[in-house]
Image: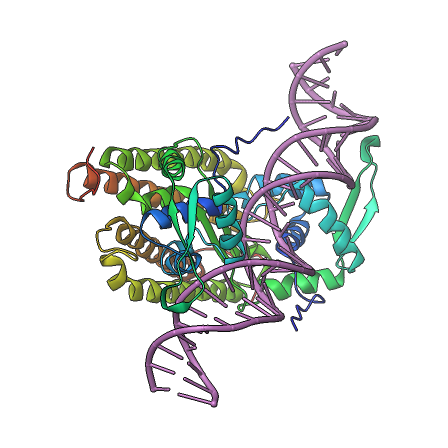
Length: 194
Length: 194
DNA sequence: GAAGGCATGTAAATCGTTACATGATTTA
DNA sequence: TAAATCATGTAACGATTTACATGCCTTC
């Protein structure tokens, strides 16, 4: 029988939530905004996940919510409990679990390149390259915010993670360009003629 | 009202299925094996997805299944229909849709590095590095098969996609090493003391 | 007073993994 | 004859997105 240890195991969404609360986010809305400006590219979450998960975390005693009607708006602010702190630290130092999932449609199209004419493969690679440029633009627009942390200005690692993203996209872009050139020059063959 | 064009839109799993059938896979089992040896790292699918999806694709007239009891085993072999070919080509040349999703737990831990002692951040990076090594080992064991195509030996692009995977993991590994060194040397600060 | 941001949530649908179940053939 | 591989499938659960709904406050 399968026994997930629900007393210590954090769901995917719970991991970002606890972390973001610990970094200074207060409300579900805060958390969503922080995610969208930072971890979104490697760990996203929607409102439909965040609000129910906050309730579940409160039931489990990992967070504590208090009504916080600043400016008359109905709002709930959350803080980590002792147990929540421990769960977060436990996850952060857990070297067992290592989720790494990728879903890359451009790469799948490339994988099926033998089914396409050379020009179509090249066009796909150019589209992928444009995608990299688009993401890089985004990332670079985040740089000023990330330099001083997305939530509080004592944070250094969000900026380093952004640096990772930028360098990754630059690497990917370069790979696309190089490969498209190799295919166009005829160095790499194509089964189907153009 | 939301109107996905179900007559032309392929579900995520349908995309690999049609492609793998076109490359020469015959049964659901074939498709699963091909995925596990190739696209798994950027486009995976389980039996629980593949078999029901094959039935749906047959209902939609994109594939055709025939009982094929080679060796006495109950088995269904599938081929693409004209409509299936068209749907596949349509998707392969569609530059509109571009799924790119990443779920990277190591990177999320790194993002929260300000909550950890320097030694723990370094340990996380070393774990990530070990993960890269592990994947690289896998990839390199696939190289001989990929050189001649995973299903038929006229295919070149599966090998190029594997090359991409190897180069990507090498890049990631180098980034981990470099960053761990920068942190260990004290070049990058840590909020929490060790 | 309209638009946009703040704030919280639900319902439906989709997507996906995991465990379970079955049974045949092939190989050691 | 036992283990591995071939082969197909379902049920339960978990995760996630999207659309919808509401209403306040602030700025133009």
